[in-house]
Length: 293
Image 1 (cartoon, rainbow, N blue to C red):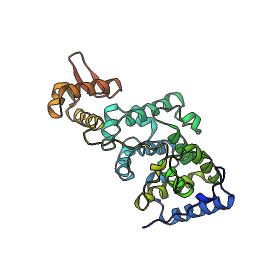
Image 2 (spheres, rainbow, N blue to C red):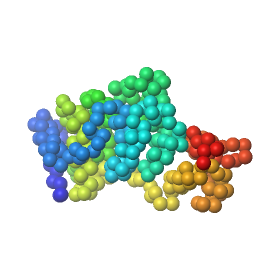
Image 3 (tube, one colour):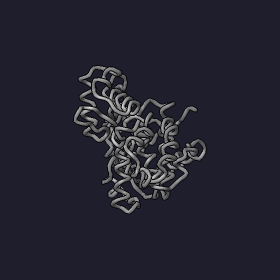
Image 4 (cartoon, rainbow, N blue to C red):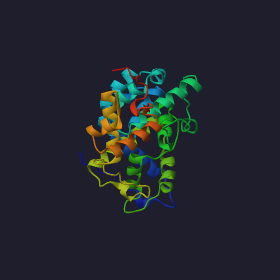
């Protein structure tokens, strides 16, 4: 479907627009959402802050289609924060396979352990409290507050930035988030949960019909290529370690690439909490017993 979006850029005066323009903008966004929104995404059918936190962390830098594949299995294995907190790191990392950015899995588990041990299993409701938890930045803290608790928070993420630049700053370049933020705040209606779903859905749909407006953002950073990257090698090392249970650097290197590169990655990932290493230089995934074959 070709998406035709309104252009309100001429109506922006001193960083603001009239209430009439805001009403028109909301009407357009909600009209699209009610007809074409992604209403079938299963994390939108819960208000459980744990389940929403899992989905929001998974959706960081990962395509929705991939999350839709991994998320159901993950929450069936770990249906509560308590279950994830009790699990071994090895089991959590195994369930996370296919998602990439594996540090998120460990951060999510650390978050759940803090929720269980320090918050009596109750998630905080405000971004100021949520952002203190591992793996949650400003946007994710706000999105959890909005989707789990319907809090009237104001935040910008890639899809929100895309639609606001295209509708209010068309023809501009080097648009700063500080210019977008007042408009996001002014446009916020009474139901933040549904509003942010709608913005994200239309922002995502724009990728099919509009040249990426985010390139006009001062905050835009082009993602580096995955093929041949250190990130790809880290993922391959973890995958191999989950398969073999334990190995030294030379064994992993034989299956992958040069020993020095693998050795550096194993040492780094040990420090990050992925692996443990014994005095003989044999690594295994943290939480997995050496006799666990």
